Image 1 (cartoon, helix red, strand yellow):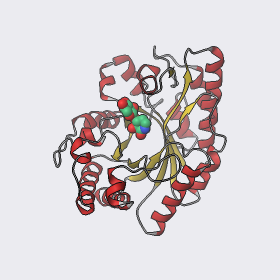
Image 2: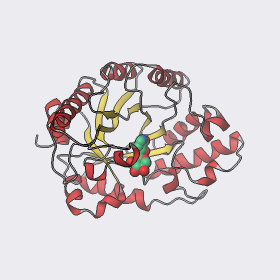
Image 3: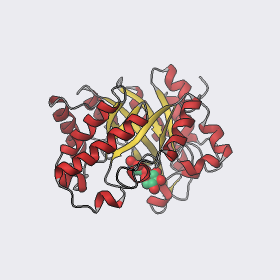
Length: 313
Ligand code: XIL
């Protein structure tokens, strides 16, 4: 097997994939690597399936950006991960600035989820980032107005829209044991015992060089023990700049240990990097002074991290 996806698949995983964004698709050198099914067997749109992009005003759906990435995945024989149905961020103002009753907002959630999930296949982050770091529910508009009912409504709408799509709840800081992982475990348990459809938990895995959690594998096993699959959905491992040889070497080890954790868990179905190159990483604009988080550098050259991934697969 020559590339990341080819090796992941021959080792029994479904895919190795990457996030991408529409604005990057005019970069032909970038796209040539993204299109290579031996490296990437799955794509996630970093922005173009979010609520502000897909339903900018109530009942008006725009699929052009999402379709561009869905069509690319299809022509490359790659799986598609929809991202995402319900999230507190990147919401159009009509969602956040209306005083909804609970039943009104649930109907809005139902329409949004069923429309976008019926339009795109494979897997969906139906719920994104529902928890605060202390394990309490994030008090966004959805939770404030409906309690946890929005989670049930979104998952049920997604299941009805596409019975074959894998439906996920996705979050960060659930990759090590602690209050937030426990809260996610409890939510999955409750949903399953109530008969609410949930197929998987996405562990985002936005990590820092030298700080990969040692309990990653055991947390993933705790989730799969509940009867759901897990996926590493947004992997990147950032460093404080400037980059040094020592940091690149540690980053290689860190990528290797994250991928090894997924390999050791049967129900960990695949790994997605949150874009494959430092050229387009979200990290520098979000975490001041940090970057170089991806397995390819900003000149589209493979870094030691690439070898770390390959070694673990
Ligand atoms: C990020 C995108 O990569 C950026 O381009 C955008 O400006 C902000 O959102 N967790 C998620 C993703 O679930 O949707 C976020 O994506 C990164 C953190």
